[in-house]
Length: 120
Image 1: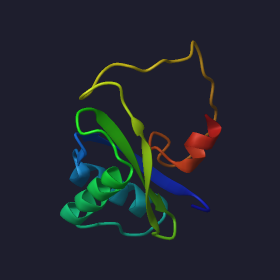
Image 2: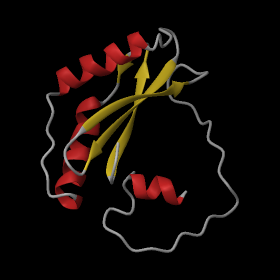
Image 3: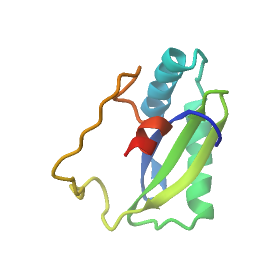
């Protein structure tokens, strides 16, 4: 995807996407504020498309996995395979650095965006 975009990483359990409606709602709110565009996909259709991607990627049926949903400033949507977990369900498995300093002021600073990802 070219240009700025927002994203959500959606947790799948057994190839079944979780809380898709909430992920889409957040993207819709952020897209309206940041890009001035609307985003309100049919949650069931989005779930089906995510599940189809998981099937094509041969995600395991007994572990957690992830799909990244990206929404560009132009309204373009993209689904990407984002990996497989060694666990089934949520688990604390993050490693955090001792310190990170980021100085900037932008709208939606707490939202996962391509700009935030590039700064990491």
